[in-house]
Image 1 (spheres, helix red, strand yellow):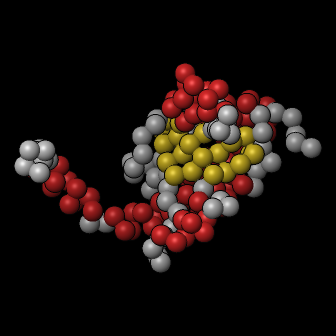
Image 2 (image 1 turned 90 degrees about the vertical axis):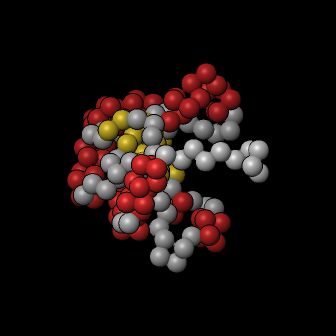
Image 3 (image 1 turned 180 degrees about the horizontal axis):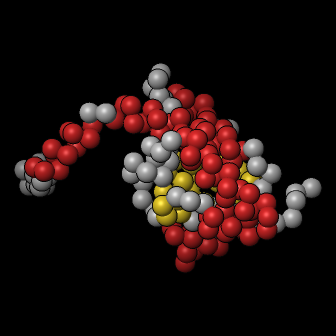
Length: 165
């Protein structure tokens, strides 16, 4: 182990990790609640094709086997739309920070498949990955404000695409 291990963890990083861990349980509980609220807004829209979130997955029972008793389903979700135009409009109209990062205290959204698999979209599609998938990493904002931002983006979608039959 001495030949492979190098202690290069910066002392300031350790201090910040300890400080940030003090209220971690409260922060993740709020993120869990916010993510579920966003999922509920999205799932109620006729423009949305699918919402990918462990609570609503057919494989939820696997997740539940390892979830802590007071734990939620996390702050990461993905959404697909019935049309490409719907996905593009939603993403453009969604009033959140845009970017591919995870774990911030604020909500981030990104066109995940395009960012992660831009040069291999055909490969991703053969596994059922929608090229217009929008991924959201939910933060600590007020849940009502987040839902309102999602609702406004969904209204924008409804204005540009035909009604589903």
